[in-house]
Image (tube, rainbow over all chains, first blue to last red; front, side, top):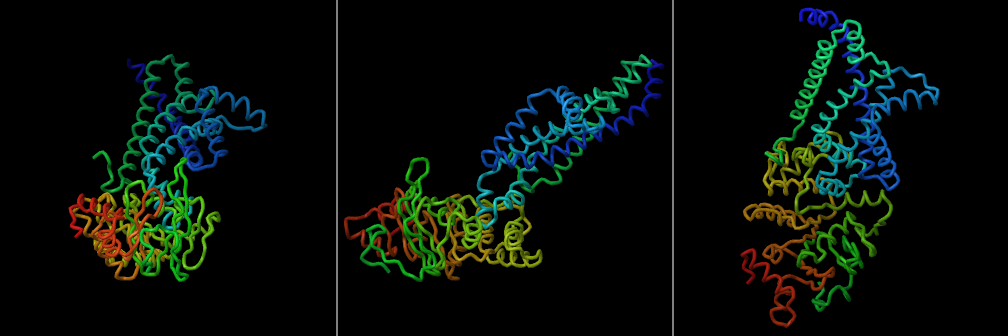
Length: 224
Length: 271
């Protein structure tokens, strides 16, 4: 028991350093997902046939292939083929991000489609172009509605980031594995890793809840 | 006035050349249904004309076709002497700015305050500065008696207040005319009055309006002309008192019957 605690104490700084890497992967992947996921959702709702088709293919592919397969496919396959010398960290961010685009776009698409049609109509009626109506009327509302789904996505990406371990990214999981296989304190150390993930999830979700509350529209609550 | 043409539909009516809005032969088919069949009408500056008729008769589609929220299949729209081309995006956007639209269910932007709702098109479409847009928006809110509620969000307003904000939002764009699509139909009876009062004021200020409504008392006392729409056509039209009186005397009484029925439902006295 005491040995275990000592092992944890000893390994903790090293593992915690890994949590910075984990957080980096998650922030990178979530940002990429947001930056491309929103336009993709807009394309799926308002785009022409071709755009909708392309977005549909993209979403279908990235939602249909396991993340482990994606990591190997891109890191050892595509990136190599293209002659990209990418670090394991960058590759993890990119793959989780590209997959996040697919999932996030569906969160935003659902939110956009849940808005009353009259919002767009009223925006058009006062002379706004569709692009302007989407950026200043539709998205500000849809983004607010997306926060609960987005916080769900965050908790999934955070935990899926552990799989970046297979590429040799030195995040929480790979560091824990490294120490555990040397000290034979598997149980204690993996519990430690689990607790760190648990805390990161909790903190992130709390922050997003605070954001949701902060940007909520006064009086606007269909389920009050 | 077009005496002698009452009850003859739109055929044979001579159009004025100085009309503010002239709609000619508008038709629209949706899902195999002819929603609008060769509808023509015109509005002079300062006119208030009222569209009445049963639900599904095409009133709402007509209004939405007039500001191109729905594109008509055929026909022409001439506003201020200029015929509008439906297919050039820039023209369409500029055209819509000149026509204010009031919806039955308000369609205020839910994430913006009353002031924000009135301001946003001034900022994003007319490109006014923040302070100019604010000043103008406050003036419009004052006009509908809601300046003190400028900071409230739509969800914090009553239905009547929401509709007044939406009127302010439309007026802020300096439209040449206002289209009102049953502006009081979604309101509780006790809130209808405040909205009608605002519309009545606009009439006094010579704002040109075309309004679909079931408020027969309002239509009879304030409308320059009643257009009765049924199955996609304007089947009867005329000055309210003359149209109804003529029908009382003659056998043709489609509009009168409809008005009596509606008035009964709303507890108004038509006589």
